[in-house]
Length: 43
Image 1: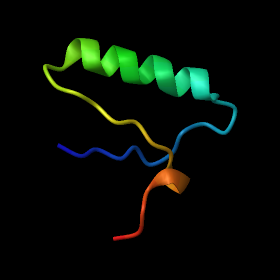
Image 2: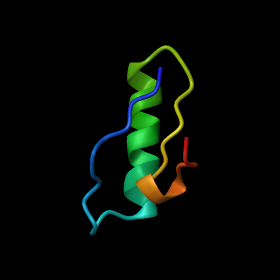
Image 3: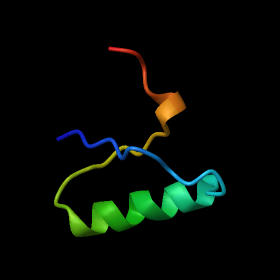
């Protein structure tokens, strides 16, 4: 399942993304990748 939030607030840090990753993996029964919009490859 892919989900791309529209925007991540500009004042968020790498630690915030890591926290989001850990929270999502705890809530969902699967591995999760978290990337910023700039980190996505074009389709």
